[in-house]
Image (cartoon, rainbow, N blue to C red; front, side, top):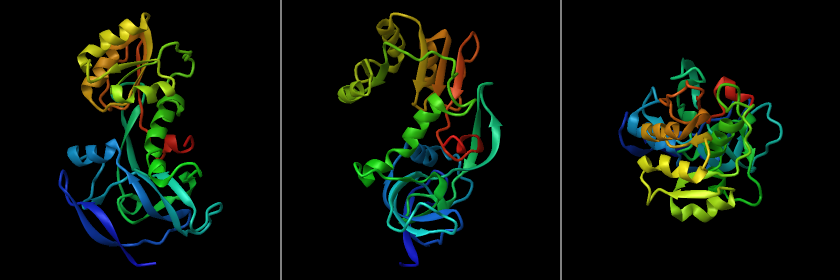
Length: 276
C-alpha cells in the first residue's frame, strides 16, 4: 500500500476546498484503517464550511459518513478482517458540554480531527462503532445511512435528555410531513399518511395546513431542518402538552406544557456512545 494519499482540505474558515497530499496513517489499538469507497455529503458538511463551527484548526478535512473496505486492522480488534466492507459515522471529538437553550437537553461543542475524516482515500475509525455493509446494498447506499439513521434513532429512542419522553403514547393515526411532492410515494411507503407539498405551501402556511389535516391537537413534531423559521413553525403546530424533537441548537419554546428536545445525532459524545 502507498504511503501517501489524496485528501480534500478546507484551507481556512469559510474558505474553499482544495485537493492535496497527506500521509496514510497506521491504525492504533482499537482502530481500523478504511479505504474510502463512498463518502456521503450530509448537512453538517456544508453548514460547517458556511458558518464555521466545530472546527478549531485548519486546514481541516471533513466527511462524517463513509463506506469502504478495511485496509488494516489495529491491535486488539476482533470481528474484522482486511477486505471487509464497512460503513461508519466518523467521530466529532467532544470537549465541554454546554448548557442547552432549554432545560431538556445539552448541546456539545467539538471539533473534527483530520485522521478521523471521510474526504480522503484512507481514514482511521474506532472499530467499536463500525458496521458491516449488508449484502443487499452498495457502498453509495451504505454511506448515506450513518448520520440519518442515528439522528432518527436518537430523536425517538436515544439517551435521557436527548430523546422524546418515553411515557408519550406514540400511536398516531396520521403522520404528516412537509416535503417535495416528488417524494410522496416513497414517504407513503414508509408510513406517512399525508404529504404537504413544500412547492405549493410556503413554510409560513404549514401550520394551518397541518392542523387542518390533523383535525385534533398535534402532540409530536420531529424537525430535521436546521433553520430558525422551521423550529418556530413546529412550535406553532404543537399542542400545549406536545413535544418537539429538534436538530436546532437554538430551538426554544419549552413551557406551557410543551417540551423541546435537542437531537445531536452523533455516536461519539459520552452520553450517546453506549446507546450507539
